[in-house]
Length: 441
Image (cartoon, rainbow, N blue to C red; front, side):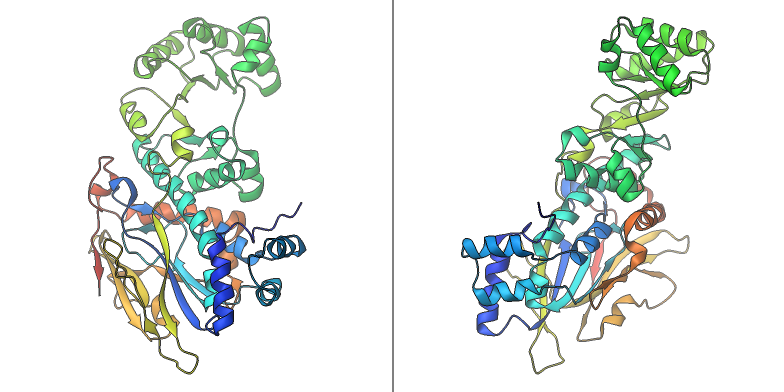
């Protein structure tokens, strides 16, 4: 079975290439841009996630015999186009916001410079990666805010497609989650993993006590025991009796959590297990996490809401042609849609975040560069601006700093510093306007 992602795309990408090869426009130099017209769910800011995954997928995008034979049998494109696809390698350049960066409406998140045929082929792939990963990161960063410094773990693999589950684990980690239950995310992206036992392990044994003893024998007293299979109060008492007062944690996965957590904390303290932590994992989202803030919860495990974007399952990003260059010209011709409600702005762009004297962000500034060289997109005008555009791919070669587990950790660190720049209004969970204005120059 082929592992190629070449056909993880929409048919019209290939039929456009077919037509463009016929009329001679396929090799026109073009600029494509990824941006979002609005923030999903009326959120205050967004987080870019998926860039490292996308760069790896682009590098590996190949049409093998299996894909080409299927396209031929289905008569999707002509033989000439099949020959072109057989030799496809992305040779263009990509600039954009670093993964983990904060973004706002009309931020030029990604700019692809390539021939029309090379660039248009990336549209579906880029949007499927960035829209999903950023949606998860957008939800996750709000949950991190709501948790107010308490650890969070991603536990949503059973609520997502098997590959989406891995991507969600990575995006949540970039957005500030500390661990995942998904082992492949640990192997592939270096995300720390965690997990102990489910209710099935307790039900397997003749008694709750036997189950707890078996788990403690295997994992030690620092393990986390799930105490709500039967009666919570009895479960807590049994857990401390079996593991001792050095029991690592108890987990609650049901019930009226604000009340139950307080009762369990009191019971643990009365039993001498004052250092035993409490983790909760019951259908949480940013709002329930915030509601638990007065409770003595030590950590959270989040699943369904996280991997589905907590009400906004896609980040509303689009991929548009914004400039083209005629074969005999060095000048870029800006192009843009003028459709009602979908107006865009043509041309290559730079973007900076304007900072005040205290280092807090005050505005997002997007500048149209016209026919100025690519390098101008990376420049700032003075010390009050932080440049947001970085080179990601040059002549088909990705910058390795943004790839793999190291790139994932770098994106996590960058998200933390980027969010720290934002004014306090960004941390509100209520619906509202973007916390920064996007100024188009």
